Image (cartoon, rainbow, N blue to C red):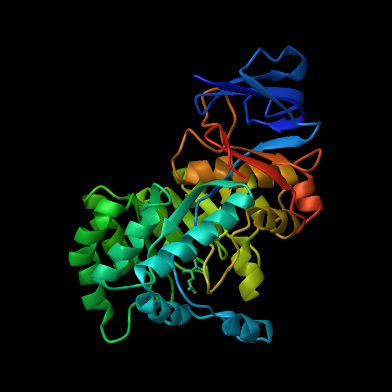
Length: 382
Ligand code: NIG
Ligand code: FE
């Protein structure tokens, strides 16, 4: 058993219930876990020591929503949107064509490159979806690739109806042969419940089929307009309803009552010019909130949790501390993970040393690479 003491931490966010943020703190990591948290002056002996020099330490980010495994580029769509065009769900098919044409090795390398990007920016837990193949072998291939880089894999065969088939026939495939091949490689089941993708009945059929074989539900909901997605997520007891851009009062009440986590993905509003959701409204109602990147080539091609956190402060109305909470513990709630997203004793030792005296700088100094050191399960990784 080897232990590492990180001392002289100027500000340490642990999310301990009595003292969520400490000052002049230290933390001891042992066997990949947080073994001790306290004042820097009281730090116990450890096998090795690391002087944080008064910098801030935060839990590693938990990115609870990404589409990392894809090929191709849709920057032309982005340019058109910035010139005033609207985003439509159909653009997904462009990425499907590029992804189907890519070799296993190319897709694996692309996913790993984006994963490395995310890690350098402090992400230590990441969810990755399929959804850019839309055929049986292809969706299974994407999930095999995803499961090599994370245990948080999501089967999103129901991303959009591919060309050359009907919605009815495709839902049958997604809930039949495709599910059988994909379920062994996935923890979660998801659907894009939206105009231009799947309606509530179709999304319900897909999620129920996944749940029947042991997958846990989460949902793309209320991204492009007021739709039935949030209510469906609450009805099914999903872990998360992600996007939540357009919410009625009844949607907010349902989220609060059900405990379904509202996943806010402000990179999408940045990149589509849709209005940002109001996170204050959700917190005021008692809704649990997560911030995630939604890293994908169509609506949010960023792997940066610090960028999304800064947007959450500036545009969603969160304080810097609430935004950090949503990007760490909120993400852990979204993924039903008790071991990450915080630095209480017993947590996995995933933490980020910032080149800043406080986590506030993540929003106060947007775009500045403040991640100095990342520790993943007790090991220095970057
Ligand atoms: O989360 N909403 C559905 N899926 C992605 C967009 C996918 C795409 O346009 O390629 C999203 O925004
Ligand atoms: Fe998404």
